[in-house]
Length: 284
Image 1: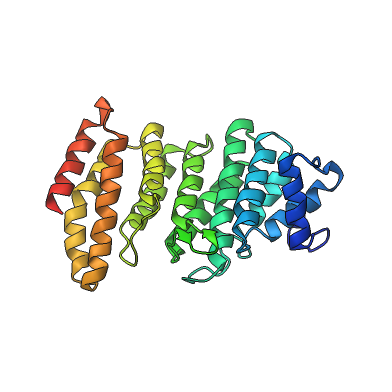
Image 2: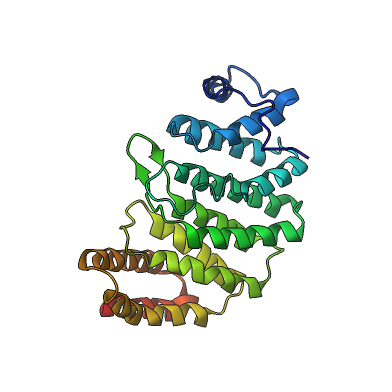
Protein backbone atom coordinates (compact mmCIF):
# COMPACT_ATOMS: atom_id res chain seq x y z
CA UNK A 1 0.00 0.00 0.00
CA UNK A 2 1.36 3.42 -0.98
CA UNK A 3 1.53 5.96 1.85
CA UNK A 4 0.76 9.20 0.04
CA UNK A 5 1.06 11.17 3.27
CA UNK A 6 4.73 10.28 3.59
CA UNK A 7 7.20 12.76 2.10
CA UNK A 8 9.57 9.95 1.17
CA UNK A 9 10.55 10.04 -2.53
CA UNK A 10 8.88 13.43 -3.09
CA UNK A 11 10.78 15.73 -5.45
CA UNK A 12 11.25 19.47 -5.14
CA UNK A 13 8.66 21.49 -7.06
CA UNK A 14 11.01 22.85 -9.73
CA UNK A 15 12.67 19.46 -10.12
CA UNK A 16 9.26 17.90 -10.76
CA UNK A 17 8.33 20.63 -13.22
CA UNK A 18 11.54 20.15 -15.19
CA UNK A 19 11.05 16.38 -15.26
CA UNK A 20 7.43 16.63 -16.48
CA UNK A 21 8.32 19.24 -19.10
CA UNK A 22 10.98 16.91 -20.49
CA UNK A 23 8.64 13.93 -20.31
CA UNK A 24 5.85 15.77 -22.12
CA UNK A 25 8.24 16.99 -24.82
CA UNK A 26 9.64 13.49 -25.36
CA UNK A 27 13.11 14.37 -24.09
CA UNK A 28 12.95 11.67 -21.43
CA UNK A 29 10.91 8.55 -20.79
CA UNK A 30 8.76 7.76 -17.80
CA UNK A 31 10.86 6.53 -14.87
CA UNK A 32 9.20 3.17 -14.26
CA UNK A 33 11.47 2.35 -11.33
CA UNK A 34 10.50 5.55 -9.49
CA UNK A 35 6.96 5.96 -10.77
CA UNK A 36 5.48 5.76 -7.25
CA UNK A 37 7.71 8.64 -6.17
CA UNK A 38 6.71 10.61 -9.26
CA UNK A 39 2.99 10.11 -8.65
CA UNK A 40 3.45 11.04 -4.99
CA UNK A 41 5.29 14.19 -6.07
CA UNK A 42 2.55 15.06 -8.56
CA UNK A 43 -0.13 14.75 -5.90
CA UNK A 44 1.97 16.71 -3.41
CA UNK A 45 2.02 19.68 -5.77
CA UNK A 46 -1.40 19.31 -7.41
CA UNK A 47 -2.60 22.39 -5.54
CA UNK A 48 0.26 24.62 -6.65
CA UNK A 49 -0.60 28.10 -7.89
CA UNK A 50 1.72 27.48 -10.85
CA UNK A 51 -0.95 26.79 -13.45
CA UNK A 52 1.47 25.27 -15.95
CA UNK A 53 2.68 22.71 -13.42
CA UNK A 54 -0.77 22.01 -11.97
CA UNK A 55 -2.87 21.82 -15.10
CA UNK A 56 -0.69 21.34 -18.16
CA UNK A 57 1.88 19.05 -16.54
CA UNK A 58 0.64 17.26 -13.42
CA UNK A 59 -3.02 16.73 -14.34
CA UNK A 60 -2.47 16.05 -18.04
CA UNK A 61 0.38 13.63 -17.30
CA UNK A 62 -1.71 11.80 -14.72
CA UNK A 63 -4.51 11.45 -17.27
CA UNK A 64 -2.14 10.10 -19.89
CA UNK A 65 -0.55 7.60 -17.51
CA UNK A 66 -3.87 6.35 -16.13
CA UNK A 67 -5.63 6.05 -19.46
CA UNK A 68 -2.63 4.32 -21.04
CA UNK A 69 -2.60 1.79 -18.16
CA UNK A 70 0.81 2.81 -16.85
CA UNK A 71 -0.49 3.03 -13.28
CA UNK A 72 -1.39 -0.18 -11.47
CA UNK A 73 -4.91 -0.73 -10.19
CA UNK A 74 -3.61 -1.06 -6.64
CA UNK A 75 -1.84 2.29 -6.90
CA UNK A 76 -4.99 3.95 -8.25
CA UNK A 77 -7.05 2.43 -5.41
CA UNK A 78 -4.62 3.79 -2.82
CA UNK A 79 -4.63 7.15 -4.57
CA UNK A 80 -8.43 7.33 -4.56
CA UNK A 81 -8.48 6.76 -0.81
CA UNK A 82 -5.92 9.55 -0.35
CA UNK A 83 -7.88 11.89 -2.64
CA UNK A 84 -10.94 11.56 -0.39
CA UNK A 85 -9.01 12.69 2.68
CA UNK A 86 -8.93 15.99 4.56
CA UNK A 87 -5.50 16.61 3.02
CA UNK A 88 -6.86 16.65 -0.52
CA UNK A 89 -10.58 16.90 -1.43
CA UNK A 90 -11.37 18.64 1.86
CA UNK A 91 -8.24 20.72 2.29
CA UNK A 92 -9.36 24.15 3.51
CA UNK A 93 -13.01 23.27 2.86
CA UNK A 94 -15.32 26.17 3.61
CA UNK A 95 -12.73 28.77 2.62
CA UNK A 96 -13.45 31.22 -0.18
CA UNK A 97 -10.85 33.11 -2.17
CA UNK A 98 -7.86 31.16 -0.87
CA UNK A 99 -5.40 28.97 -2.76
CA UNK A 100 -6.61 25.72 -1.15
CA UNK A 101 -9.33 25.62 -3.82
CA UNK A 102 -6.74 24.42 -6.34
CA UNK A 103 -6.01 21.31 -4.28
CA UNK A 104 -9.71 20.52 -3.87
CA UNK A 105 -10.67 21.22 -7.48
CA UNK A 106 -7.85 19.28 -9.10
CA UNK A 107 -8.24 16.42 -6.64
CA UNK A 108 -11.81 16.03 -7.86
CA UNK A 109 -10.46 15.80 -11.43
CA UNK A 110 -8.05 13.05 -10.36
CA UNK A 111 -11.01 11.24 -8.77
CA UNK A 112 -12.87 11.57 -12.08
CA UNK A 113 -9.96 9.95 -13.95
CA UNK A 114 -9.73 7.06 -11.45
CA UNK A 115 -13.48 6.47 -11.76
CA UNK A 116 -13.21 6.59 -15.56
CA UNK A 117 -10.50 3.94 -15.39
CA UNK A 118 -12.63 1.80 -13.08
CA UNK A 119 -15.51 2.10 -15.54
CA UNK A 120 -13.16 0.53 -18.08
CA UNK A 121 -11.35 -2.06 -15.93
CA UNK A 122 -13.64 -2.69 -12.93
CA UNK A 123 -10.94 -2.82 -10.24
CA UNK A 124 -12.42 -0.74 -7.40
CA UNK A 125 -14.37 -2.57 -4.69
CA UNK A 126 -18.00 -1.51 -4.30
CA UNK A 127 -17.38 0.00 -0.87
CA UNK A 128 -14.71 2.31 -2.34
CA UNK A 129 -17.15 3.57 -4.98
CA UNK A 130 -19.81 4.21 -2.37
CA UNK A 131 -17.30 5.96 -0.12
CA UNK A 132 -16.48 8.15 -3.10
CA UNK A 133 -20.17 8.93 -3.61
CA UNK A 134 -20.64 9.97 0.00
CA UNK A 135 -17.51 12.11 0.03
CA UNK A 136 -18.30 13.85 -3.25
CA UNK A 137 -21.76 14.73 -1.91
CA UNK A 138 -20.22 16.12 1.28
CA UNK A 139 -17.70 18.03 -0.78
CA UNK A 140 -20.11 19.68 -3.22
CA UNK A 141 -22.38 20.64 -0.32
CA UNK A 142 -19.45 22.28 1.48
CA UNK A 143 -17.54 23.96 -1.37
CA UNK A 144 -17.84 27.76 -1.10
CA UNK A 145 -15.16 28.85 -3.57
CA UNK A 146 -16.94 28.99 -6.90
CA UNK A 147 -14.31 30.85 -8.91
CA UNK A 148 -13.64 29.68 -12.44
CA UNK A 149 -10.49 31.26 -13.90
CA UNK A 150 -8.26 33.01 -11.36
CA UNK A 151 -5.98 35.69 -12.86
CA UNK A 152 -2.31 34.82 -12.41
CA UNK A 153 -3.09 31.35 -11.09
CA UNK A 154 -5.24 29.72 -13.77
CA UNK A 155 -8.27 27.50 -13.45
CA UNK A 156 -9.86 26.65 -10.11
CA UNK A 157 -13.25 25.63 -11.54
CA UNK A 158 -14.31 23.62 -8.50
CA UNK A 159 -17.94 23.20 -9.58
CA UNK A 160 -17.12 22.14 -13.14
CA UNK A 161 -14.51 19.67 -11.93
CA UNK A 162 -16.71 18.00 -9.35
CA UNK A 163 -19.46 17.76 -11.97
CA UNK A 164 -17.01 15.73 -14.06
CA UNK A 165 -16.37 13.44 -11.08
CA UNK A 166 -20.10 12.96 -10.53
CA UNK A 167 -20.57 12.14 -14.20
CA UNK A 168 -18.04 9.30 -14.02
CA UNK A 169 -19.55 8.11 -10.73
CA UNK A 170 -23.05 7.99 -12.21
CA UNK A 171 -21.75 5.88 -15.10
CA UNK A 172 -20.17 3.36 -12.71
CA UNK A 173 -21.87 -0.04 -12.80
CA UNK A 174 -21.53 -0.42 -9.03
CA UNK A 175 -23.84 2.56 -8.50
CA UNK A 176 -27.48 1.51 -8.45
CA UNK A 177 -30.40 3.52 -9.78
CA UNK A 178 -31.70 4.22 -6.27
CA UNK A 179 -28.39 5.97 -5.45
CA UNK A 180 -28.72 8.52 -8.23
CA UNK A 181 -31.27 10.70 -6.45
CA UNK A 182 -28.78 11.11 -3.59
CA UNK A 183 -26.57 12.94 -6.07
CA UNK A 184 -29.25 14.87 -7.94
CA UNK A 185 -30.23 17.26 -5.14
CA UNK A 186 -26.66 18.39 -4.26
CA UNK A 187 -25.93 19.02 -7.94
CA UNK A 188 -29.16 20.96 -8.34
CA UNK A 189 -28.45 23.06 -5.25
CA UNK A 190 -25.08 24.10 -6.71
CA UNK A 191 -26.94 25.62 -9.65
CA UNK A 192 -29.04 27.77 -7.32
CA UNK A 193 -26.20 29.87 -5.93
CA UNK A 194 -26.34 33.62 -5.32
CA UNK A 195 -22.81 34.44 -4.15
CA UNK A 196 -21.41 34.88 -7.66
CA UNK A 197 -22.24 34.38 -11.32
CA UNK A 198 -20.97 31.34 -13.19
CA UNK A 199 -19.21 32.67 -16.29
CA UNK A 200 -16.82 29.88 -17.28
CA UNK A 201 -19.06 27.14 -18.64
CA UNK A 202 -20.06 25.66 -15.29
CA UNK A 203 -23.67 25.41 -16.45
CA UNK A 204 -22.76 23.15 -19.36
CA UNK A 205 -20.66 20.87 -17.17
CA UNK A 206 -23.48 20.61 -14.59
CA UNK A 207 -26.00 19.51 -17.23
CA UNK A 208 -23.85 16.50 -18.19
CA UNK A 209 -24.23 14.42 -14.97
CA UNK A 210 -27.95 15.21 -14.81
CA UNK A 211 -28.40 13.85 -18.33
CA UNK A 212 -26.29 10.84 -17.34
CA UNK A 213 -28.76 10.17 -14.53
CA UNK A 214 -31.63 10.13 -17.00
CA UNK A 215 -29.71 7.68 -19.19
CA UNK A 216 -29.07 5.52 -16.12
CA UNK A 217 -32.80 5.33 -15.38
CA UNK A 218 -33.77 8.25 -13.14
CA UNK A 219 -37.46 8.97 -13.66
CA UNK A 220 -37.88 12.04 -15.87
CA UNK A 221 -40.56 13.15 -13.42
CA UNK A 222 -37.87 13.78 -10.78
CA UNK A 223 -36.22 16.38 -13.02
CA UNK A 224 -39.58 17.83 -14.05
CA UNK A 225 -40.51 18.39 -10.42
CA UNK A 226 -37.29 20.26 -9.82
CA UNK A 227 -37.85 22.39 -12.91
CA UNK A 228 -41.44 23.20 -11.94
CA UNK A 229 -40.25 24.32 -8.53
CA UNK A 230 -37.63 26.79 -9.78
CA UNK A 231 -39.85 29.92 -10.09
CA UNK A 232 -41.27 29.48 -6.59
CA UNK A 233 -37.82 28.71 -5.18
CA UNK A 234 -36.38 31.88 -6.67
CA UNK A 235 -39.29 33.89 -5.31
CA UNK A 236 -38.65 32.45 -1.86
CA UNK A 237 -34.95 33.15 -1.98
CA UNK A 238 -35.53 36.70 -3.23
CA UNK A 239 -36.73 37.53 0.26
CA UNK A 240 -33.54 36.15 1.80
CA UNK A 241 -30.73 37.81 -0.18
CA UNK A 242 -29.89 41.35 -1.20
CA UNK A 243 -30.85 42.63 -4.63
CA UNK A 244 -27.48 42.11 -6.31
CA UNK A 245 -27.20 38.53 -5.07
CA UNK A 246 -30.70 37.78 -6.28
CA UNK A 247 -29.70 38.85 -9.79
CA UNK A 248 -26.68 36.54 -9.51
CA UNK A 249 -29.06 33.70 -8.62
CA UNK A 250 -31.43 34.45 -11.48
CA UNK A 251 -28.56 34.71 -13.97
CA UNK A 252 -27.20 31.33 -12.87
CA UNK A 253 -30.62 29.73 -13.23
CA UNK A 254 -31.28 31.18 -16.66
CA UNK A 255 -27.87 30.20 -17.99
CA UNK A 256 -28.26 26.65 -16.71
CA UNK A 257 -31.78 26.30 -18.10
CA UNK A 258 -30.69 27.54 -21.52
CA UNK A 259 -27.75 25.14 -21.58
CA UNK A 260 -30.03 22.30 -20.51
CA UNK A 261 -32.48 23.21 -23.27
CA UNK A 262 -29.79 23.25 -25.95
CA UNK A 263 -28.41 19.87 -24.80
CA UNK A 264 -31.81 18.18 -25.17
CA UNK A 265 -33.10 20.16 -28.16
CA UNK A 266 -32.85 17.19 -30.52
CA UNK A 267 -34.19 14.60 -28.09
CA UNK A 268 -37.78 13.65 -28.95
CA UNK A 269 -37.98 11.57 -25.77
CA UNK A 270 -37.34 14.66 -23.63
CA UNK A 271 -40.01 16.97 -25.06
CA UNK A 272 -41.68 17.26 -21.65
CA UNK A 273 -38.42 18.52 -20.15
CA UNK A 274 -38.12 21.16 -22.87
CA UNK A 275 -41.65 22.33 -22.12
CA UNK A 276 -40.84 22.58 -18.43
CA UNK A 277 -37.71 24.57 -19.18
CA UNK A 278 -39.68 26.90 -21.42
CA UNK A 279 -42.17 27.41 -18.60
CA UNK A 280 -39.40 28.18 -16.11
CA UNK A 281 -37.75 30.71 -18.39
CA UNK A 282 -41.07 32.44 -19.07
CA UNK A 283 -41.67 32.78 -15.32
CA UNK A 284 -38.26 34.22 -14.48
